[in-house]
Structures are given as C-alpha cells and as structure tokens.
Amino acid sequence: MARADTEVRVSLGDREGLLGTLMLAPAFLYIAALVGIPFFLAIALSLSSATIGDPHIHGFVGLANFAHAMHESAFPIALRNSIIVTCATLILTLVLATAESELLVRDFRGKWLWQILLILPWAMPVSLAAVDWLWLLDSEFSPLDWLLRQAHLLGPGTPWGPANHLYYYGREWLGLGAITMINVWRLLPLATIIVLAGRTAIPREIFEQAQVDGAGFFRVLFRITIPALLPLLVVAGMFTALLVFGDMTVVALTTRGGPGYATQLLPYWAYLKGIEGGALSEGAAVALFMFPVLLAGAVLALRMAYRADSN
Image (cartoon, rainbow, N blue to C red):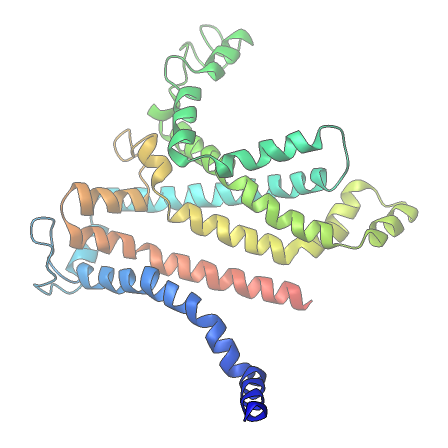
C-alpha cells in the first residue's frame, strides 16, 4: 500500500503541466484580485453615470464619458505631458543606469558608500522624498538658486534673467523638468540593479580579449557591453515607463498640475476628475485612456527583449 502511495506521489510530481499550474496559481489569483477586478470595475464605471454621491453602477451612457474627457482642454495637455515626462525619464534613467553599472562593476575605494547612496532613493518613502525635493526646488529658499547666484548665473545682469529665483514649480517646462528629475532619482536604483545583474553576467574574458586587441572604452561599450545588455535594458525601460506613466504621486505632491494645466498628467487628472471632482465615471474614463498606451508599450518591450535575447 505504501509503495502504491509513493508511486502516485511521484507520478503527480512528474506531471509538469499540473505542477506548473499549481505554481502559477497564486500569482494568477493575485493578479486577478488586485488588477483584473479593478480593471473591469473601471470599465463598468466609465460606461455609467456614477458619481461620488451615487457610486452605484447604473445609467449606461456608452462612450459619452470618453468623448467628454477628450473635448476638455486639459486632456491634450495632460496626454502630451505624460508622454514627455515618460520618454525623458526613460532615456535619462537608462543612460545613467548603464553608466552606474559600469562604475559599480569595478572595485574602487568607497564603493560600499556609493551602493548605499544608490539604493537610498528607492528605499525612501515617496512622501519624504517629495518633501526633500520641495525644499530643494523651493521658490524662495532653494539651495540650487543660491548656488546659481553665487556662480553669477542667476540674478540681475546674468544669462538666466534678472530674477533671483527660477520658480521651478511655477513654470511649465521647469515644472516638467522637476517632475522628470524626481522620477529619475526615484527609479534609477531599480534600473541600475537590473542592468548591473546583466553586466556582471558578461564573461570577463570577453573584455580582456578586447583590451588585448586594443579596443578603447567607448568601442567596448557600444560593441560589446550595450548589445549584451540590450534584453535587460529593455526590461528596465519597460518597468520605468510603466511606473512613470501610471504614477500621480510626484505631481500631486509637487506642482499639483499647475500653473493651470501646464504640468498636468493623465493619472493625476483622473484623480482630480474622479475623486476630488466627484465624477467617478469620467475619472475612470480618463484613467482607461492610459491602458492602450501601457499595453502597447509592454507588448513592444517584451517583443524587443525576446528578439534581442534570441540574437
């Protein structure tokens, strides 16, 4: 009898399809509960006339909420800003992550301190980080403005105008630049860790052979390192783009979309419409505008990573 039970257990363990299903079940249930249900709920809300005062899903209105959102003056500005901030953050993060991985793969004095400073932005709560950046780019007490004045780059008779302050959060492009830099600062540790994992996996013999052949740093970088890192760069870029495009925390804690709609982003505008404005259906419609962009970006990134890995 014991032998029969052992054979049953072994046969079940050898069934890769069943074992794979059991292993994937927790992840599938997690995604279904925390992603799938809210997603379909958002679709139902966007097709209804639900509000904060009457949150029940009723009154089918079709695509009226989407049409209304697209005709508002804030929509094209928020969409443009979301694309600009995401692309700028993506490019800067990948460039800096590649540079930092090249630095951290080498041994140098004080490397442990650099590693601690690298991971600190990722470990720091977003609210605390926003407070630091609010002080750093303050309209009156910014230390950056003080340094620029000391360098005679800011103030009367200087190249950047007569004002003693740049008012980072009060101007359109400076505000977008500030949001971009905060996102880069927050997400650079994650991207660096992903890229560094790939960089350390490249056999050292390849670089030694390139050095013997007389290849310089930039030739090795563009001919060996970056092609070998391309799959992981795509993965890091995908995570960065998804996290930035769907994030409203930074703009909510800094510019709050101002002045006017100058620094408005789609996620924060969806929050303003749906929660603060009370129009749950319109807020859900604005939020769903992000889904096709995020889905297309994720599919494209995965295809690029698969092709790069196949080559």
